[in-house]
Image (cartoon, rainbow, N blue to C red):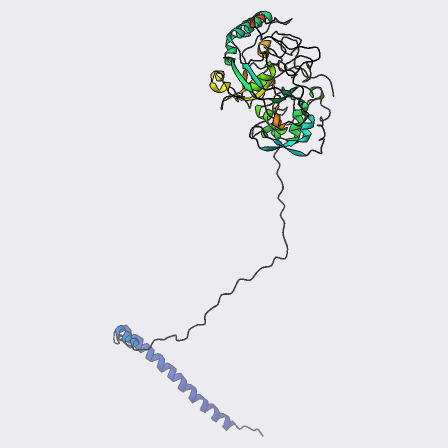
Length: 473
């Protein structure tokens, strides 16, 4: 028999339906009220006053936040510890050279410079220009020229109009020179003749050689010839002028063909000459000092006397180009200094002034030349010059930073800077030789022996280069 009868099930269904119908009725009622309300608003039956609503809201108590948030304390940023170091290698960009060195084909190996006698040390010397100490290279001193004493004293510096006239006549007639080879105007800058007193000093017996100057460049280092002498070029090498320069540079070392080692160095600027001398603790001579060494006390027109002698100097009238620095060592001179006439002209310290000899300063003790100028004085003539330019009183000039194939130099040394035992007797005469005893008379100037005609464009004519060496090292 079933636990549930059909009558009990019917009763349960009827009771649950009443409740459902009641809920549905309430929902329908609310919906009808909402429809009625919306319709009333639409037709204006019900009005809503916004001001009344705002007034009602004004009476309400606003929300107020009474709690204060806790302050925030900033903290330091964390410290990062690198775990590894990253190295970035930047490649070195090397600019190509602007010119490729062209070496003389006869040069097989570089000419080594002499080894320093004391390990290449640097000693203290005296800068004669400032009186302060300066570094002196012992390795360069080992190669340096011998020095001899030039006795101080008073002498007549410059020339006279009569001597210039005689020199021009001798040039045109005796040397076989054509018109214009020598001119009276070329002697005007050495006038008037005036008395000058110089202090004693030491002068190098020979002109500076290629071997000595190349050693100086190598000691300064590669590329130093370009601006290593007081910020100016020192010399011209085959890199700048392969057709004329005889100093060779291969980007690492300086050299010269062996046949030129003992020849006077040329193509050196005035700055290069000065720098070399000061590296030895020496200096360039003043014009007055140079003329004192060449003329002596007896006013010589040439270093050996009053008359030209073609066997005593290398000029265009002797048939020789440049000669080694020690050639003509047997030629008598006032103090035993060689090649003060011919071979190469020589830089001196002074600025050139065409009218300087007429100034009061020219007759002062140890005159230094004009305070300023655009050209430096050059003395002594060259192998391409006629003897007119080899006279002891003749003056020339050239731009100091323009090296030439006809200009070399030699150094002098102050007595206070000389090492003991380095000065000579100062006579400059060989056994059996005697110095002239009378002052020269222009009328007695002897004529040269031999020689052919030629021309000289002006007092600063640049001579042609000697033929290139033909022998191999």
